[in-house]
Length: 170
Image 1 (cartoon, rainbow, N blue to C red):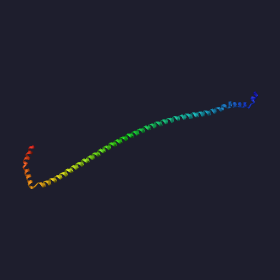
Image 2 (image 1 turned 135 degrees about the vertical axis):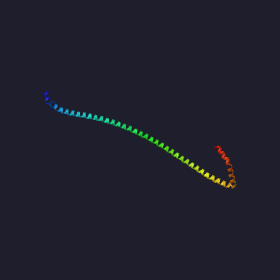
Image 3 (image 1 turned 90 degrees about the vertical axis):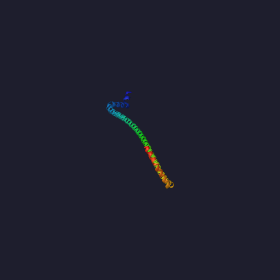
Image 4 (image 1 turned 135 degrees about the horizontal axis):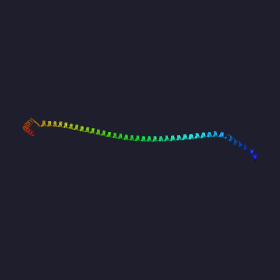
């Protein structure tokens, strides 16, 4: 049975295989292991680089979010300041419009009063003219030369009494 076992091709394949790995295994194993170690080291470096890039990306994302938040806060503040400025401008415009309306109202009142005074003055002048014309007409029709002389004589006779009243009052 040993003979059949030794003469079997399987036995010699197995012996050759074992001898091949015993004699050449270390020579083949080292380069294969070096290749696998290099590949593992390269994969570790790639993973480390990926982790570093991920951290940098996360930091950049956080910074971008902070900047966006700061920009939003600044935009809100600008909008609030703009709103306050618009309210202030509207209030100033309203006050200016009120003052302008008051000035125009005063000017209109002044023009009305001036027109009233001019009308009153014109009425007085016209009334005085009419009164003097009416008095002239009345005097011309009522006073004759005899009535005129009697009025003058009466006025001359009343002069000493009028002077005496004035001297006493002074």
